[in-house]
Amino acid sequence: MPDTMAPYSVSLLKTDGSQQFTCGGTILSPNFILTAAHCVVSKANTQLPPANVTIGHGSMDRDAQKTLKATGVFIHPQYMSEKGRDVRYDIALVEVKKLKFNKATTSVPIYDGKIGAGQQLLAMGWGSTEANATKLNMLRGTIVTTGDTANCKQYYPEFEDNNGPQLCVLGKLNPGSSTCNGDSGSSVVASNQGVVMLAGFDSIGVFTVGSSCGDPHTAHFFIHAGFHLDFITSITNITKEVLTSAPPTKPEQPEQPEQPEQPGDDDEYLGPIEQDRGSIIEPYKPIVY
Image (cartoon, rainbow, N blue to C red; front, side, top):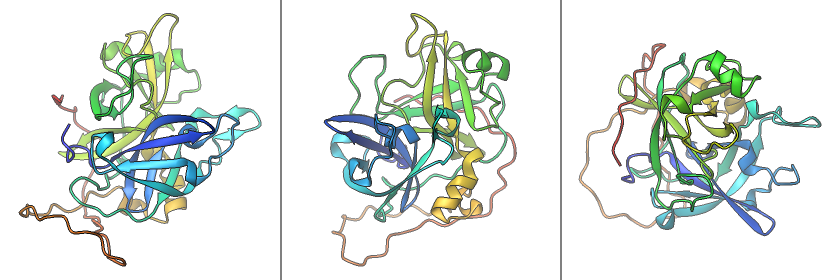
């Protein structure tokens, strides 16, 4: 997968005591990464300190990424309670030192229109291609399809619909294609009038007895980014208009040798443009990696 295919996708390494866990995230702005709350929570059910969260960016190859530590971690207030974790609010923001945007590191707008059953999405991550398998160094993507409310509720009764806190995709709609272990927090995108937009990110999978990743008898639930815009704006202080607007298209420029960063350099920020997002996003065309 070329570095410019998904420059908004980042890897996230969670250190919890002597153990480390792989997740993903999505760049929303030079200072904020969107991810799953469980990617920044310890086994003791406490929020991890920022120093325990490492972000990798700038390459689809994890071994070639630039890395930096988080400077802040913000979990949705409804995620953790005395009753346990509410996975409908499995969402967190990771604050980082200002990223320098370029072709391999940039943000993606959030889709805030309606999402119905039968919508194709592109889910990606550095996780395993099957349960208990070795995690990948290269980012991979797969096409998944949203299910209807009745079938999704059979796997998770608290599911509302695809315009609520979560999105639901059913294994039987794309047998052999799914997210898996290590993909938590990773980007799930849709194509809206030819513009790639963030629909959500990977959260949990629900399996029947004996089933595994990619099995028809499974459902995966993603966090619906557009539903949680109020939380996102409250932490980032970025308006909904900016978060949901695509950056302007710039003419191609000849490649220039990368210059070392100078103290005080202002990073490029791609601002919003006016765009009619509509209420229906088109099918996502399969991509061969």
